[in-house]
Image (cartoon, rainbow, N blue to C red; front, top):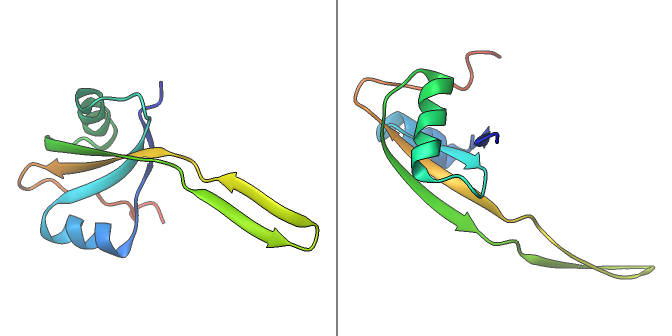
Length: 96
């Protein structure tokens, strides 16, 4: 099971990383906080002090087109906010 799907790179999460040392990830819906902590520590080589998780439900979307009404849903996902120990950093832009 791949725990971490992708990091969240937005203005808000960049600000949280710079000021409060918190980083966001989209994670597998079945993963718990202990598994998320282990996965982040293995992947980035940092010490995780705290993990907060949020479950997002998919939204219903409707689009009106010439051929009729198209309805569907966006995907549901789980978001994890990881707080690192003092002195640790994650640089998502080092490979660019």
